[in-house]
Length: 386
Image 1 (cartoon, one colour):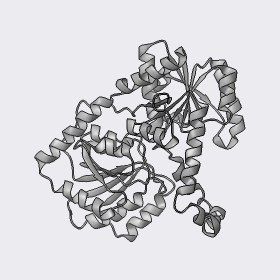
Image 2 (cartoon, rainbow, N blue to C red):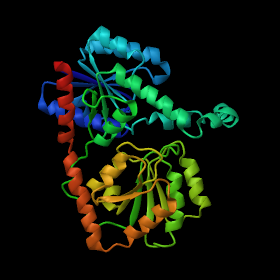
Image 3 (tube, one colour):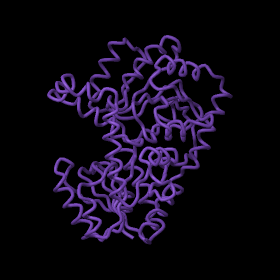
Image 4 (cartoon, helix red, strand yellow):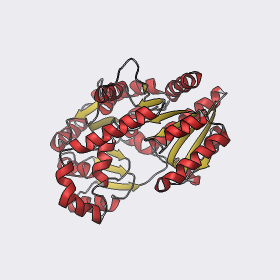
């Protein structure tokens, strides 16, 4: 069986890591070939192991959608693809591609359900002209979120209707999509497949007094500005702790300026790192203050390394990851409550900390790559056998 995944960049982030895990597993099982169709390929991040388990094809960028669709269809025919996995959203004209090629198609939603509503609000404030339009006209139409949610529901329904399968990141997300779209649960072709997390054999429990953030500096989604304001409340109370920020992005300059404005003394901006294992091994707490998240790998990677997660409970995915006494969920956007939670964890005795750390490590073992990749294999086999 031949399977292709569409990505914009490869190998770049969490969704791409999941594709690699699936490809590695299917390569080891045998009888499967995995292809990645990507607009941008970072050759410096490709390893021999990655290139051994999948084949990469370059396609046009999203800016040239008609060219991208045509290029993907040509590659599907020449490569003999049986299943096409679109990460995030459907290709334009995917229904025609299905009819002409006989290929089964899948949408892999790596965010929360109806994530498009956040992107819609963000795009309408991006750039000088759009910001003017936002203040003059669009803010009144979009500010309560109702119109953006309506548009997100329409896009999700279209993606669902045009494809053979729609995957989400946990069972609660599946239930949310079915209920919101008014689908028949018994017949819905929606599948819950979590993101995998590698089992760490030598977890380091000798932690330093470090609060860690790992991720993109994109403020519309990650809202690292909140974490800096929270740290301004926390820093004087726990003087032997420090905040470490690993990552970069378009809002990096703004965040560094904010840290200076807040006169933060124990904050370090570490930049982008290909391998963040060392940071997780040292950190005691890993934090997310995001506006939106699906199944955040920063939390699951931290748990697997014995970190205690603290995050706003913006989605059921976060609540599922940190539930079962495996971390702390703070009511959305309560910055004072978040600060109090960090202080609480920093003040716990070692026995209590170890209990929570080990709960998280045990929980992550149930999401090992081979467990999750087998779910994908079952889905592919089911689709092709129909």
